[in-house]
Structures are given as structure tokens and as C-alpha cells.
Length: 73
Image 1 (cartoon, rainbow, N blue to C red):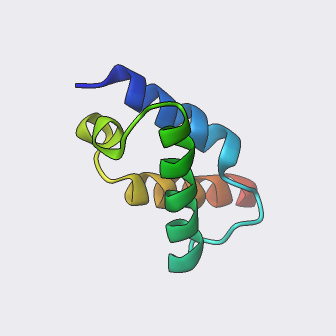
Image 2: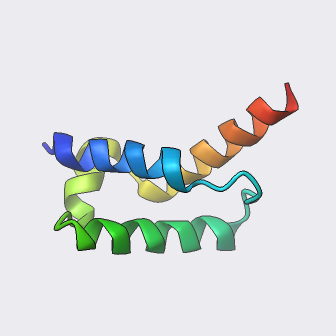
Image 3: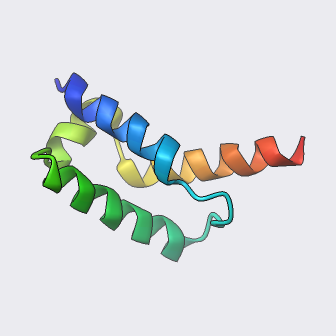
């Protein structure tokens, strides 16, 4: 289990989910690729992130949906 991977994911999401991004397949896929590239630069692989957090794709989609829902309030 990797606390380091989970922490990286949460920190990355808070700083990299742009306010203007929509929850479409291409945006989420691009952000997923960027997250894995950024993690690799820190020596963190995708398995280390996903073993505790589950699907990164779903985590990014969830962050976008919740961010956009918060803006509507």
C-alpha cells in the first residue's frame, strides 16, 4: 500500500484540475496522462498510485464533476 502514491494523487488533483475543463472523455484522458507523467518525474509509478486509490481516470472524473457541481451552488 502506498500512502505516497495516494498523497501525490490528492495533491495533484487539487492543483491540476482546471476550473474550465469539462468532464468529457478526452479531457479526463489527457489529465490522466499528465498525472502519470508528473508522477513518473517524482519516481512514483501508476501501480503505486492506483493500489490504494483505484482508478486514476475515475478519480479525475470525480474531481471534475465535484468541482463543477460546487461552482453551480
